[in-house]
Length: 218
Ligand SMILES: Cc1cc2nc3c(=O)[nH]c(=O)nc-3n(C[C@H](O)[C@H](O)[C@H](O)COP(=O)(O)O)c2cc1C
Image (cartoon, rainbow, N blue to C red; front, side, top):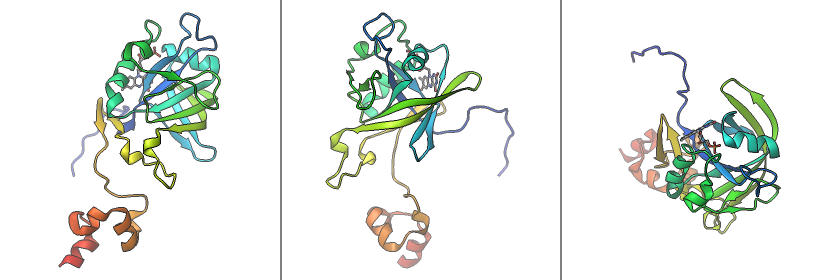
């Protein structure tokens, strides 16, 4: 494979795209009401306790709101929300009420005092800021997850969250993508035949490209 060397850039892709909701301590005051900012520079950074990072430019209206309350909510984006998500990434809450313009609903978030959740989001993740690291263009908010709310239609009879049914969206190199086919699962490269059959029935019927399966069919 011949490769071309290029200058350093934010080329790590795909990344999540999220709608972060926040509000000031006095949401009735001008400029302190509930707001939504779209972020792509975000991720999970620790398991115990569950922690996330969100990088926000100081110039964003949301930056001030998050600094004021030390709270925000990460709302996952599905196909239905993707246009609103894009809108929240190109318009500022300093000039308009994005909840109102988009017909979205700000609802109370369990375990938080100020930041609302987006009612229409399939999953909302309540976060409390633990540290802020100034990186350069962006300030990285390191936050602990203090609660999660999930659309009940995504929870099966055993209480498992079925995120594969949520129609989630990812972001890659300037474009939004709907997540597609399942290619495998954690550890599938070394999983037993039984586990593969249970977890990926379509592939184990021969639609997949596993070498083991190919050799059994021969
Ligand atoms: C797909 C996408 C991803 C974005 N990611 C970030 C990000 O990670 N950090 C950031 O500060 N702004 C990001 N933005 C820009 C902000 O969402 C945008 O400036 C927004 O209008 C700020 O809203 P606010 O002023 O109401 O806070 C992104 C925009 C889009 C469309």
